[in-house]
Image (cartoon, rainbow over all chains, first blue to last red; front, side, top):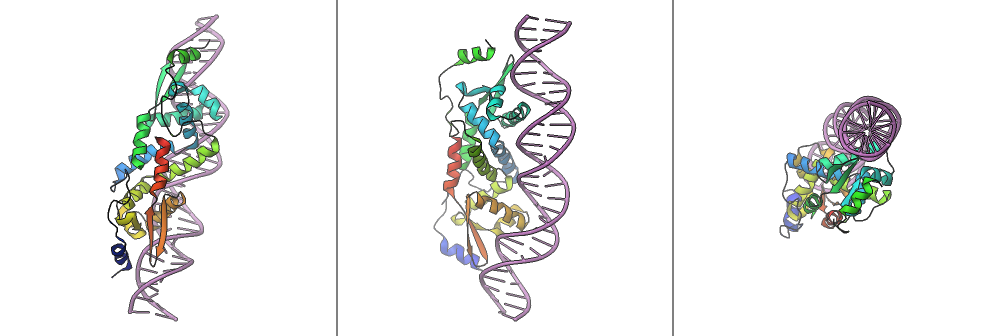
Length: 116
Length: 116
DNA sequence: AGATTAGATAGATGAACGTCAATATGGTTT
DNA sequence: AAACCATATTGACGTTCATCTATCTAATCT
């Protein structure tokens, strides 16, 4: 019949050739939720923020320092931090003047697990 | 003087609290390159495509089958596949009528490594 | 050669996103 | 209470992106 089927038969080398957390087909809903999470990380500024916080004492930093480091406006940085908090990649804690943002490593691990 | 400094001193528990591939601050260029890669994965349709290919015999699938599975137009699927190929997450190989797309697991592993 | 088939490309459209300036919020110091 | 400080929110603007329809390309079959 078709080449396609022929191809498939002749090339078969057994299943499970490619280990991955995205193992089985996923429905649209799960795919959207997962994409949402990846989107949070798929921005250069947010990756820089993550790296900066990761490199901070206690893996914790406040908006002012981060703003200075990435050289963007303070509202922009606040916006990005909110995205990361919504994705549960960061958590925030207020103390007086400052708001401290810290990394949720477990959450990053979840993402990594999906890819490996 | 400021609370900020006080806070930092009193809270110190030692360095390297948060292991991560995004360990040190990264410059804008690297951040952009990495974001580009995450962006390729940060889309529900592309995640579904990856999962579908992953679950296919030989981790290899052709456009028609994928189009049918995700229920989007064929050009849209072709577009997404191109994005994944450009990101080197998929590779393509033409054979007669069909173009076979297969997963580059090493590339997914690289992404995972950044997060863990 | 002509018809058929799988996939790629081009162009259009609407939605989502990153950024900023301006302003609001809520705690702090005097 | 008033001035001040760090951060959050709002609204606007330009860009990027996912999707579609229509068309093109290249390979195969009759």
